[in-house]
Length: 379
Image 1: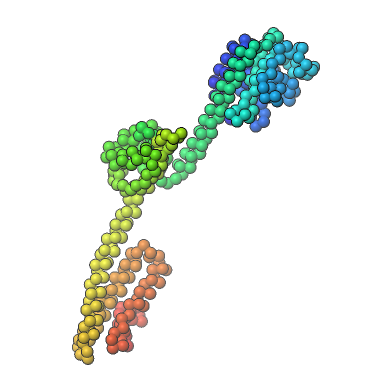
Image 2 (image 1 turned 180 degrees about the horizontal axis):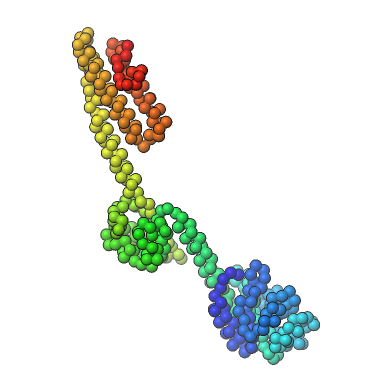
């Protein structure tokens, strides 16, 4: 067994001694297959050492564990259990003439230890006393299991804290009464307060009324047992307005919502970049309309010009200028694009410049010159 509430187990032993009228007693628990005394009253150091040794196999406590039931020895001198063993010598040296031992089993029926009481004179507890000792043994087991579970939960919480403290995103746990139960280091840094100044305090007190009012509708939803995901601009005191992406997961136990866990990501910079990108795309789209409109007009003029060289020459000049402007704009757009990794961007640009050649009605083509220094009329 792991850690347990020593005072609670000692209280159970005291009660068992009082109920039976014994003068001594002990509770031993199995830990990795070995018995250890976790509580005792009136036992000498010599007797304790004997109980934990290999020669104690003839003791009533070991017999109770083997049988899985209470064992009572009314008089150790006359009982055949001992058969001249060292156990008899040690019991008499400890001042014990009678013994009662009750096994401790957990809820699954597994043996976890034993409770024993010792009497200075021959004695047999009556049925009522034995039933009370059995009840106290179950009480001791309940204390031990409770504290075992508490220890496991504490270890899990420590492990979870280590994990969450190494997560870059803010994480919190909040209660049904809208207080912080846990925050990781990332959240404490984000808020600008130590965790000790956040945990246990009302959410509204920590983040302020404005931010609290913003997230209140989402908190109400998660407290109905619903998983909640949302994005909102939240004005944190000392931090300012931040665009946040938030996930709430209800903390449900035995069908009751005790609170929720929250994970959040600050997407302010991402949203700003997206807005800048959209503004650039909008600007370039506007700039692209002008050369495209001029190119369309020139194509129509060339279709109608016939053999008039003056009209053809003027239209080709305009086409050349507008195509240069168009290729430059497309190049700038690619340079500013999210997809502009150096090699990929160069490949895309070369492809665009190649496809930008304009084949005119008389068989000539307008496109980038061999030197790449702009557009020229190519024969």
